[in-house]
Image: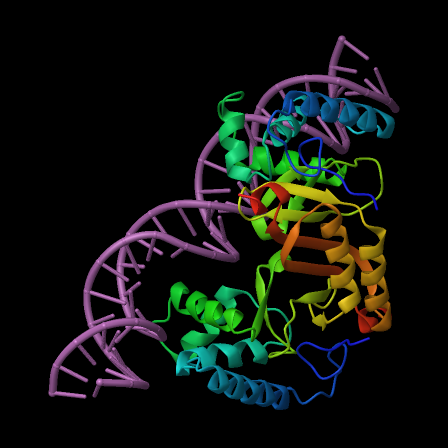
Length: 165
Length: 165
DNA sequence: GCTCATATGTTATAATGTAACGCCCATGAA
DNA sequence: TTCATGGGCGTTACATTATAACATATGAGC
C-alpha cells in the first residue's frame, strides 16, 4: 500500500507538525520538475503554489485569491484560475471536485490521478495512490468497452483524529 | 460484474432506443419506492425526476430549470434544487460533481453510491455498481484509519460508440 | 534591440448554488 | 369545528465559483 499525506507529513495532519518544511519541500520539487520539463514556474505561479501548500487542507479559489491579494494587490479571479490551471496541468496541484477546492499534490512527477480521503469534521484531506483502486475502475470500464482517460476518486468520512473526539 | 446504464437500456445509449419507456419505468419504480418508505413524491418532484430522465445524459440544474418552466411558470432555482435534494436523498438521482450535473439512478433501492463513466465526446454517462471498486477504496481508507462515509467515483473517457467515430 | 509567444492585468459577466421569509395546505389534536 | 403544526413550495435576494474577452507586460531567442 502506498498511502500518503496532504498537506502534512503523516496520513492526516498531526498537532506539532512543522508545516513550513512541507511547503519548502513542495516548492523545491516543483522547481526541479518544471526545470526538467521546460515549464515556466513564474513568480505568480510559485506564490499560488505556496499558498495552496500553506493551507492545511483543500482551499477554495477565492480564499486563495484573498491571500494572494496580500502579496499582489489587484489580483483577480483569472489570476488565480490561470495559475491553478498551470499547476494542475503540471500535476503539482489537484482539484477536488466535490469541494470546489484545490490541494497540493503529494506525488508530483509520478503519473497518477488524485484519490482523496476527505474528513468532513476537520476539512483535512489525504491523498491515496492505490493501484488497486485504479485497477478495479479500469476493469469495470473495460467490461463496458469504455476507454478511460481520467479517474476521480473522492471519499468522505472521518479521519482518525476526528473519530476519537 | 454488475454494470449498467444511464439513461438508456444498454451500457451506453444506442441509436434506435425508445427512451420514453425508460422514463416511465423509472417513474414507476420511484413511485413504488417512495410509497414503501412513506416519502412524498409530490407533483413537482415527479416532474423534476421525469425531466432528469428525459435528458439523454447528465443535465445541469439550470437546464432542468429551463425545462421545468415549460411546465411551471415561475419556477426558480430553489424549486429545482429542493426537488433534487429530495430525489438524491431517496437515491433516485445522483449528482456528478465533476460536471455539476444530475442523472437518474439506475439502481434505486439497492444501497450503493454512484460510480460513473462519463464520455467526454458525446456527454453520455453509464453507471457502474462495482463492489470491487468500493472494496479497494475501503481497504485503502482502512489502512489510514479513515472511516468511510461516501465514495465518489467519476471516470472520464470515451464510450464504445465515440471510440469508433 | 526586436519579435513573437506567453504570461498577466483588467473588466465584465456567466454559471452554479443558497439564505431567508412567508403562504398554503394536509394532518391530527383539542 | 377550530386551531396548531410541519412540510412543501413560491419568491426575492444574494453568495459562490468560474470564464470570456481584450489590453498590457514580460521574457526567451534571434
